[in-house]
Length: 167
Image (tube, rainbow, N blue to C red; front, top):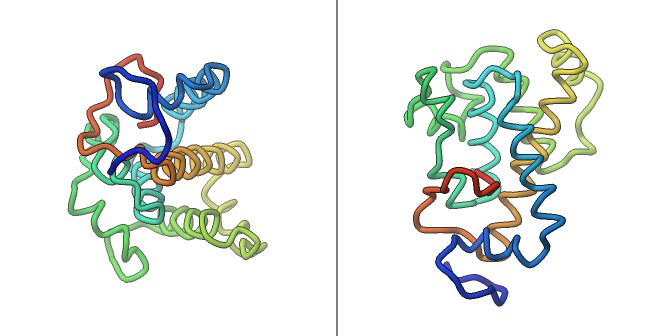
């Protein structure tokens, strides 16, 4: 995909070039990325949520990339492929199902998140973890759409370390 905005010249990834157009915002994006990658959420759950958002956003970078932490705990491509049909799959726990339902509604119809779903989340997560889950979802939703809408998707999602780029 070709960028839908004019970007500065250079050998960097398109997202790095785009963020260079607004350094203060780039700094905030980097700080959010750092906070999300310091998440205390289980990394299997984190990756399942991240993949469901990637599927909803249609972001090629997000669909292709894997968090090293998730790979380290045995998350497979087959498991991630099953996320699209999580309701019909036996691969997911009740906590993962609640988080995936919350993720889908957060990304597609947030006003439909009702008290019943929030009560199910509260059975598995303390209030701080629910805040963390919502912020993790928000990070992947916003940055995936940022890349997809502006045509910053990359054929390769190899993101150099230390770039502060959404992964």
